[in-house]
Length: 262
Image 1 (cartoon, helix red, strand yellow):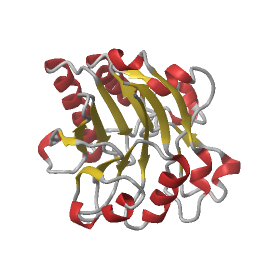
Image 2 (cartoon, rainbow, N blue to C red):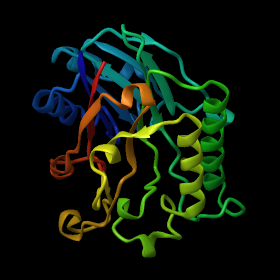
Image 3 (tube, rainbow, N blue to C red):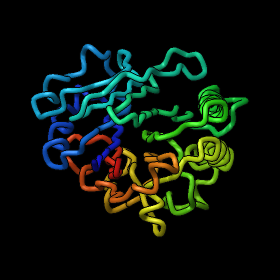
Image 4 (spheres, rainbow, N blue to C red):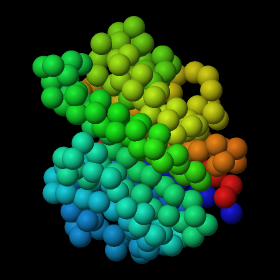
């Protein structure tokens, strides 16, 4: 079985339900993982997605903030979630496919504007969240798993429009990159996107602040698809749907896709 998976920070699933429907219709991934749904689970327009063949959903939500959901053509079993840093945020959910593959969907905290935890509580929250992810993977080594989501870090120099100019900007600071690398190493996760597209600038997010985001092209690769080595060997077909960022009333993120031979 070949499974095609997409991950997308939708920035309000109710506001942009039409964009979700368009993506499901045009790209038809087997699984779509959404972040920043900003909706209680019972308010997610699941019936609209079910009408397109995505009748299975596992989600965690809260009013107006955060929220993660996994939509699927195939049956899913709720595999739980973890409350990282004990804040009660809906930032993680896991689902299990019939063959035992576990999909983890994450929305890592953005971290605020100042890259100093002593003066910015949000930055400390982000680092602590990543540390707890790392420690979890160290204590329970993941297997046959896929991890996706808005991890809010662009780790490589070519994952941002200017490495030099963004070294002190939250999402690309050395301390964040180091924390993400430790988290990745703890689970032996393989960065599938960069396995498939190893060279060149690659972005999945462009700020709303740019008057012409496409022309300015000041992007960052904040959205990721990772897999454990047992699945990474059969992964491929990675791509970022940059044109989606130009749809009407878009999210500031573009969907990221990859396929897996399960």
